[in-house]
Image (cartoon, rainbow, N blue to C red):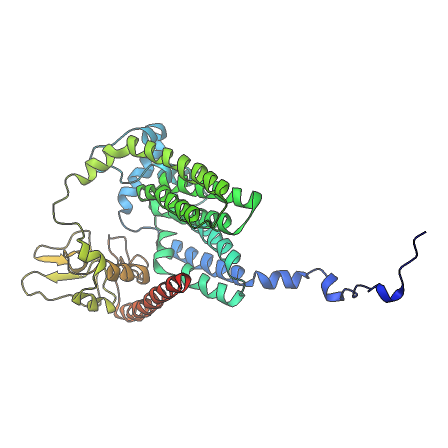
Length: 399
């Protein structure tokens, strides 16, 4: 018969504290979501104000309006037929088909119904970015700083409101980022759902913008790195190649085969010499110092006197007058990185400026110019800090 263990051999488990057993309160749960709630609220209010003031009428608005009408009148033809006329579409048809439905069923005017659709698509992209950030960043203040930076970049505010296919790149990019994060950080069903999110985001992007055709190749490169460095199990890498690379690649091929004639008709007549050179893409140029001032797209340079216009800038049509050229369009004058900073941190086409009446480029006052000068200089600071951080992190991971 077994004897009971003596008291000296039995160690009682320490009692669980009340704090350990107590479930999180509603206040605790709410506090954890405060950054997301506040940023989303402010973002929606800013975009609604943009809708009220016509901020949805951006680049090529008249052409997009015509495409929306074509999509509403003949949706099947719009979806399936190539175009070879002067207004040939430069993007796949998904955005204009969805926006045409929104224009018809919403409670506002057709233009503002589309703007609300744009806002909802942009909001979906922002929420997906937030979900990705919550996977990697535990600190609420750091998350709030990231959200404020991303949500109120001029490029994000504009692309989530202006009528154009770029609207759908926000949720598409958000799906791809969230899916990639799940594949890298999660296990089991969550990792598999990540692959589905990548495939869905790529499909949405490819059906909206031809530039998303490179995403399957990027995913293939990522899968190769994960396999070579053995950062993921081999079986998961294989499934990643099938779901997130193979299936989207088939869709990409089908889209290109179907619509390449439309692209050919648009780009074949471009004059030669307009492309970026390798030095434009990689080398900072002396003229880039000009872009420490926020130069609008429509700033003109007199071809005879070489004088540049200064603020205040008037509204302007799509083409400069005879004897003038748009400063930012002068070939090989600025580097691509400098132009990118200018586009990211300023309202480069003056879409949201007071006094705009609907011309292609809006006006810009002296006060707005001063504010945008401050914005682009802080943008240069952010860009340089970001580049330094990436290089530091890269070398730190290799050492």
